[in-house]
Amino acid sequence: MNVFLTTFVAAGAVTVANAFAPSNFMSKFAHGTRFATEIYADGVVSTEKPTGTSFLPEETIERAKAGSPIEKAKLEKDPINAWVDIYEYARRIREGEMTWEEVEKADLDTRLKYVGMLHRNKRTPGKFMMRLKVPNGIVNSDQMRFYADCVEKYGDIGVVDITTRANIQLRGVTIEDAPDIIDGLHARNQTSFQSALDSVRNMVGNPLAGIDDQEMVDTREFCNALNDLVSLDPVTETRGNPMWANLPRKFNIAISGSRDDFAHTHINDIGLQPCANTETGEMGFNVVLGGYMSIKRVAESIDSGMWIKADRESVVTLCEAILRIFRDESDRKDRQKARLMWLVEKYGVNEFKNAVIKEVDSYNRGVKIYDQQSRPTDNFERRELLGVHPQKQTGKVRVGILVPTGRLSPNECRQLADLADTYSKGEIRLTVEQNILLPNVYEADVAELLAEPCLNGESRLKVNPGLIEGNVVSCTGAQFCGLALIETKSHAEELGKKLEALVTVDRPIRIHWTGCPNSCGQVQAADIGIMGGPARKEIDGKNMAVPGCKIFVGGRIGENAHLAMEPVKSGVPLDDEDLIPVLVEILKTEFGAVEK
Ligand code: SRM
Ligand code: SF4
Image (cartoon, rainbow, N blue to C red; front, side):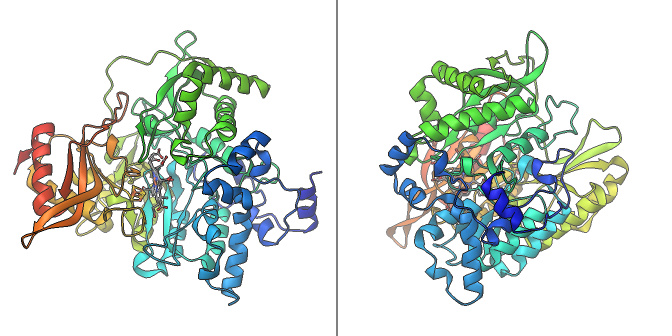
């Protein structure tokens, strides 16, 4: 028996039963396994337990030694230590032995990110954002209430954000509170482990999985399986997988379930696009690779030439093979060049495909990689997620609700939890547009749901918002993010409402905001993208530097996705008097808007 397990069994810890799984497809984690936090909190850590670095080949370690400061920090003290350290730091702070300022700087700024704790040192020193993992964006009412309970005590900064990866971030968290939150998450079949820094990020799937008559593949099982692959220790079956704890960079995976591509496969490192095998008719995925956004480079995914069957073994094996190659071979010196696209280009697409096939074959799991299949060419209109829409199940509908810029107060979290308990058997789905969707609502209950006070009057939450205000997306921005050049969420929400009042449009106009060129708000994919940047303006006769933006126009999503690479305008001040006329003009000339 594995030494670590022996030690752990001898410690006599109790198995915690899983509480409530959000979908029919329970992850491996859901079967009442032991949780990493229990083990590490007990201090029962075997020296024989592998670290992230112990999976790296010697040659990769050598490159890491000569690599970026983050590579050196990871070698000096392995990322998996964070799974232990957070408990130890919290205990010592609680017991008055130290303050958060005394936490080792590399832990504070870097390593704690491996447990999803991101110090907001520039904006709210001592307070953290805790990022979770929500595979396929599916949560339940119990989890939603838990988020509210966790952040409520932090006052104004205690809010919950839905992210552009259909994920959850809790704000205002302190180190001393983190273990209780992590334990609470683990007891609810969720985790914050390996959600940030050089980790595989939240698995994005189809928000209409299992409820849509145009669904090609149900993505839930795959998102859960991949989430287990990357953040479940295969030996201990506890959260936190050392195998993928020392990656060279972040890594994004998205799985689409229909031709709508609600998951945005074109901006992920691995994108799985459903497509039938033209010969056999069997359902599977074309694999696209390398999509990403950053300061240095913005890249649309490229065809890998590969197709796999839509079965769990094929999906997990393909992703594992690509991850293994990425982990061991990608750049460790220049973090700007460590994303997958650079490695694929270094190989050449065909050679990369061959390397993946060789890797998959070496696992001897009987998984076959086929050649890419032809995509459907007949007309397809991408559907809407907000509002009330029929499901494949007779008598049931899905109801998409706007959450402006993804920001939820504790009270709003509880309101959504109550709605879910009353109308959707407790289930809530998150979208990459930072909104929510209640599935499986009985048609007969819709009128009552639409009349709920929390969806009417002054409430921010709306089922049928305007075509502009309902399609605003925003990154975190300057309120919390130290990299931000501008405040985003509050401007985005306000400006959406103002533009709605000024013009009429005949289709949804997606306006995305992002506070800096990292483009977490995906401005290049938007109809209109607003990116924080420098601007100047005459104030009292003086030419002053003011908060400003660059404006991108014409990004497309869905089957014919396209990224708008260059801004059409730069240096536009953020003030209403400067920005609104520019946007109204773009809305009129590019999107047929008519002034009211
Ligand atoms: Fe992002 C870094 C927030 C989606 C590209 N991103 C950051 C940090 C961690 C920077 C920091 O330490 O402050 C931001 C945390 C701010 C905060 O307090 O919330 C941050 N990114 C976000 C979120 C929360 C934006 C949002 O409001 O929804 C999104 C969280 C997703 C999640 O749940 O995991 C978020 N970030 C994205 C996306 C969109 C996506 O994944 O579809 C991108 C572009 C796609 C991509 O990664 O290729 C994105 N974020 C970046 C980058 C540039 C990556 C690069 O290769 O250079 C950085 C900077 C970095 O990693 O060095 C970054
Ligand atoms: Fe922060 Fe920039 Fe990402 Fe916005 S785009 S969350 S400002 S890193």
